[in-house]
Image (cartoon, helix red, strand yellow):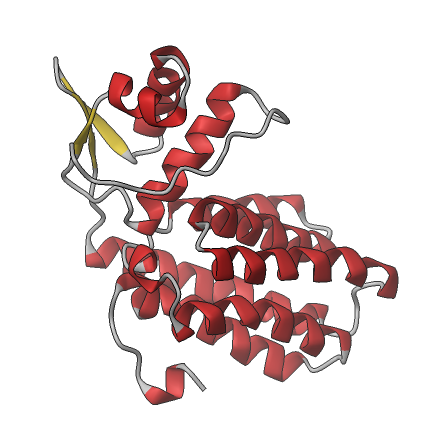
Length: 228
């Protein structure tokens, strides 16, 4: 129970339980709370500066999502994800997200780009500051916003769910690295390609971006062709 992770200040915009859950999910997905480690609600509550109740509620919800399991009289143990599970998720995402990028190239209204660019800049900024919770939250909002232009809510919901299931166990080890900065900047690069109508290039970029899940973001080196 001794692992340390960065707790992003809890904003009042959402319920306390939701904000705690978001921060805990990000810590689990990024590897800051490693698989197999036990955490108690009171200990986590102290870190967040809140009562144990919203933490316990958040952890129970995370249990339903498969992120943790209850250990009687001890707390919650972070669950692991097998390499096969990770590869399976990546395979499905590769089938969905890159073709969407190609389809949307040149079709997103010009007036939408300032907001999308601001989201991408937030990802870059949070990566530079080492705020993994904000990084993952901004990343999710950005990709959901782009996917929304397909005007297919079911597709957006499916991709959002797949992204929420994606574990990035090596992400915490990428703080202040060129790899994290490069992957963050890919969001700005994607917007540039979409705006210029370069569908083939946008599709290739999304393939590379998603491949980081089983490369950099899993704490593994990537082949040169995957990172250029």
